[in-house]
Length: 241
Image (cartoon, rainbow, N blue to C red; front, side, top):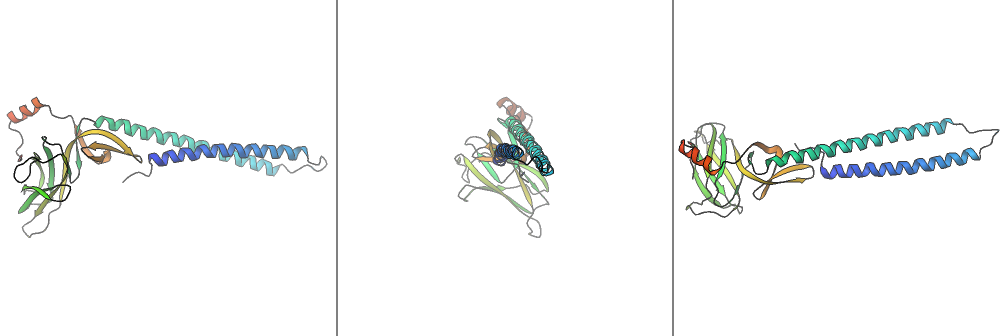
């Protein structure tokens, strides 16, 4: 759930607090001028009742304290938002995993898709679509219940390389009774930058912005020598296409 605290809201709140401070100062100045004038022109034999003025002074003091409290709260909110942005900068250059059906593809680089099946399937298929909704790739998926991994090297049905862009993935699985099995897809991609939109901090992944609250984990990208070592040790048991 997105917080109600946003950058634009925080800025507007800080502006309102500043305006309230100015207005209170102007009103208090006018109040003092009026009080001074009335005291100067009062009848010495019948002085004014000071209770009303005292009550108004108390009200001014209470309003001033509330405005000061609002100002301190604005400062705390601004500090928290800045800390969130600073912390998110650590994602830049890292490979992050997040729940999504969208795959950012950089031509020549494979994309890793993790998916989980809620039950054992008799039919299970991985289908990948381009931004126009056209099917560009399809292959058989794992059927066992649990978490699986598939590495797509960005080729189409004829093994031709596809252009860089954002694609969507669908894991279509049916059980023995032809009931649809619930699936969850997790995509891994590299963060290229950070941006903020109305208090929500996003990691820039390919052409998409992913809320940092949706990121499940992050890790340093594997270097070429690391990949070679993994392949020498046997690599993944899951298919790479």
